[in-house]
Amino acid sequence: MFNVTVINIKESAKHIAILLIILIMIFATTKMLPKIKTNEILQVNLSEKLINCLNIEIPAISRTYYRANSIIKEDGEELENNIIGKLLSIELSQIEEVEQADNKNIQIAENDENEQQQNNLNNNISTNSETQIVTQNPIVESYNIDINGVKIKNETSFEINNSILEQELNINKGNVLIFHTHTCESYTPSEQYQYQQTGNFRTTDLSFSVARVGDELSNYLTSFGFNTYHDKTYHDYPAYTGSYTRSKETVENILKDNSSDIIIDLHRDAIGSKSNYDPSVKIGEDTVAQLMFVIGTNGGGLYHPNWQSNLKFAIEIQQKANEMYPGLFKPMIVRNSRYNQHLGKAACIIEVGATGNTLEQCLTSMKYFAKVLDEYKK
Image (tube, rainbow, N blue to C red; front, top):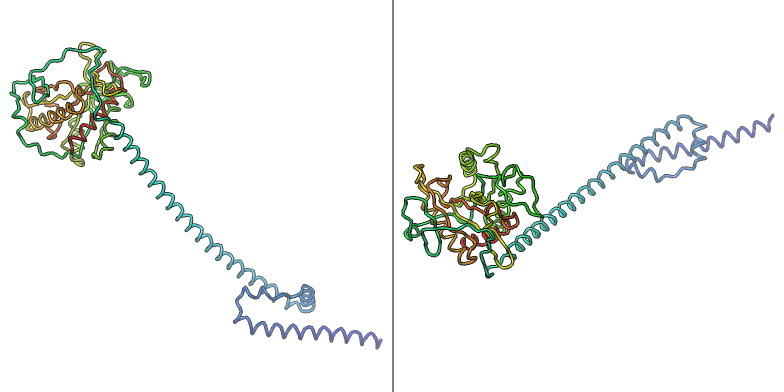
């Protein structure tokens, strides 16, 4: 019995010694906690055997250890979350910087591409090519006035002579408004431009009507630095009658926010006596549709104070065209009707080709007409 008692005392002494050591360590740790960051406690390595022993002998220590471990884990997770958040914030910031840089590079590339396209448009226009009228199905042209080589068919009672050029023409040459009173006018279908006709040489598909020609003119003028506004509102569909009344309202509304002296109502010449009439001129290797000015007056009794300035503008443009591309313009026509040209000091109708021309020929003519306007602007 005595021997058994001695063994128990030794074991108890051993446990008491361990307990004292633990208490000392807890006391020391308590003193150190304010000076040590929470995450640094993780660096204290306690053997699994010691921890298990304490858990068995003193349950309170087990609970204390569990709570301490939980706090350390929570603090660690919070610290980890903060670190992840900061890293994520840095990454997002870097991504935004990369995206901004990419967008800037894309914008620069687009600007360079647009500039290159504009240069290609401009460089593709010859100014010294031989020209020749090549209309295959001509109609006899007539005129009764010649002003400095510009042929005019005057259908009014007004006397038109060289004095028309003496008046001052003070206009802004940099802004151009293009619209279409007869938006649905179209051309002879070709292999490249087949389309479904809505009427006799008419279509509501803007990709094949005179509106497409207006797009081409607008693109070329923009490449030359003009401020161009192109309107493609239908004015002759679903009803043809009243087209000029509707286009007048359109132009008046546009001019409220887009000032322009040069106002071009772009048409296709009417069928006339022959549907295969194809007024054409060859410029270098290009076969293009001929153009024709139609200038209105107040001969019909409507208010129109600008008709003489409009006529002077048309004469000056045709003079420049005769210098650069003889035959590009047919003789212009001056009529009693106003054609809404009272809305601008350089307003006009320009008829591009006729029913016998193809859309290709009309599109090509726009680059030469744009070059004429650019030279006139200078």
